[in-house]
Image (tube, rainbow, N blue to C red):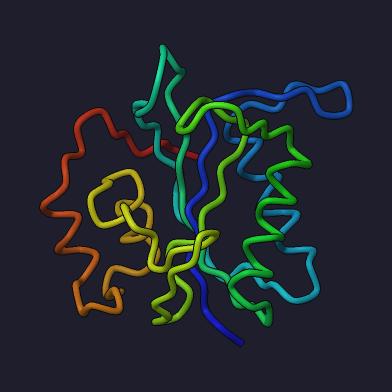
Length: 168
């Protein structure tokens, strides 16, 4: 079993089975779907954070979080699964960094360093994004990147402007 950390994000609602799912519900639905996969175990989930959108246009704020998974999947098979869940939940890929119902990113896959056109590990911008690091620190404060950098120390050097931990 490999340990993988994933980032979760959503800033659009989606109608599912006649019900509107807000961003928190989108993240919870994705986690539920992951937990039902026979080769994936959801070990820990961070609190969610409200974060300002970065990207084009006037977008709603995001809800972000992180999860620790145990998996028998390869990194690319996990990526395929995450993208399948995004698609099931209405993700449309039209504009890079545009608004989305669901964004699931592999942040770390063990200590694997990997770079292909489809997947770069560790996630190439995680070290500079408070909305990624804060949830990770909540579930693994002593976690280090393959470079040896501690995520708590990286977070201390990131802007947390506009990032708010959500209660409940």
